[in-house]
Image 1 (cartoon, helix red, strand yellow):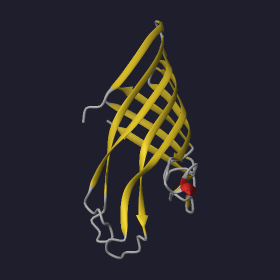
Image 2: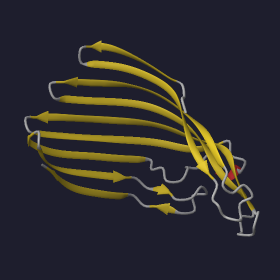
Image 3: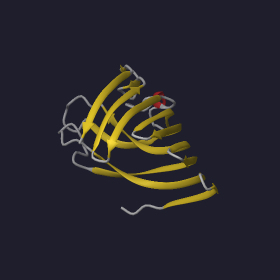
Image 4: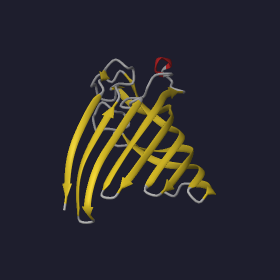
Length: 193
């Protein structure tokens, strides 16, 4: 699919750029091939919209960026008894998930060493659902925060040793927020040569 987008940028100084963009994307949702679904094997093309604006800086091995963004993604919902009886369920397009957030990134290089990090704060809420209880709730699998950091040593272009740390905040596993996935942390070490 070809979808429209528009971006504007202004180079405020030789090291600083301000930008804004707006665009659309297409996502596909399919209906399971189960007898319970009246519309089994059907697919939907959903149009998502995103706008963002931000500031980028780069100078002498330092880079930083700050971005504000908003995304609207159509959501699907299974309606009917959905009890396994043939034809008891139908998947429909039902409202949107509105995501609003702030992302900050920074990195610094000193010779063979590089340190970098990023943080995302996100508010995501359902809107316009035919199920009033879903409106205002978080869509499934969307954390409210995530943090990343890394430290790398590259003595030359062909080799690198690195440590990576990641934190993902808690999220809900279901649309009705009845099941919650706790926050988690990950630490990795990598080697490349």
